[in-house]
Length: 414
Image (tube, rainbow, N blue to C red; front, side, top):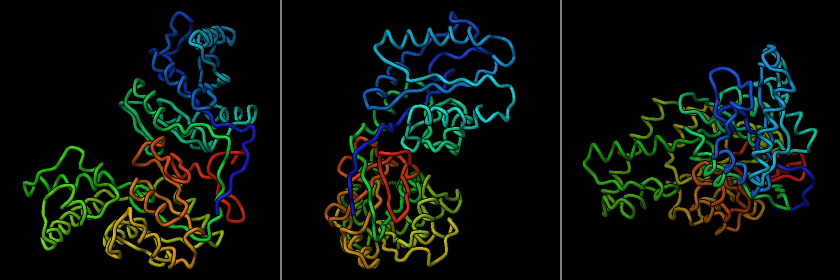
């Protein structure tokens, strides 16, 4: 079930950390406008932010104020320079929030979310569709605590909590161009009677292990492997990949032998590295259980891989109402067979089900089965997922409401 509702004043926002994202950092604190130099890439990023209908807000810790190294009026002069540079470029910042507190437990000081929550309250911002972009794990923590999607820009540091990571600020414009969903006048509301999950790229991200398994296998068996093999094969079954994309074998027996080697290699890799659910998945599972909505798996993944992954996630054997794998169907995606079988097992009509997918072939499979589909941008850029009924960067951006109502986009603070 899908409805569209008019959009209210709530709008998504990109929250930018200051030093290291907007301007070149210095060893300690910037205490003069003369030392404040804006990155050209930030202005490009701000332009894309504005074009996509997002507000832009600066969120910055400035402990130097609390330490007495600079006054609030002197800090304002630095920010006036920023606003003048932005205006000269024909752009606009909605607001600049700073915290000068020296107390690390201050509710406004990152990693606490106070400044983001304050901005959302004062300006009617939709945090669930917003981004926090910074160069420190504390920026990521603040964004996550506020309910935003998060991007860490740092070549040396990492944060497992970040939704995405870039090495340098010069990569930021392209990232936003591919992953900021254009503003819309409508939000989409779903009320599914049953939900079907693709696996890889939706519940977990095991793309690195799959890619490595193919590469190890090719090296060990002296088999050719195109540079873009993984992009070409994602979402497809081995029975299609090995003969049609890689050209490694034609006979069913040899295809089956090679497929077995690849999947055994993959399972060994995930057992070594472990596995975590993607952002938003634990909350979505809990919401479905609380609402009494049955859910199943409909994946091209071999069944043994699914069982191994479910064990690694510590999920009980009866957690899903049904599991349909690539072993259970005659036709792989974009044929809708796996989704139609899952819907039947859930006891719902296709139009009353809802699919979560990340691959182009999976999106098309849902459409071919007349099943609404929400795409998640784990594997492909958000702007390329327009064929889906709706799309999100991460499932953590979904609005999980009462009465089995699930929202994508915003007409309200979710």
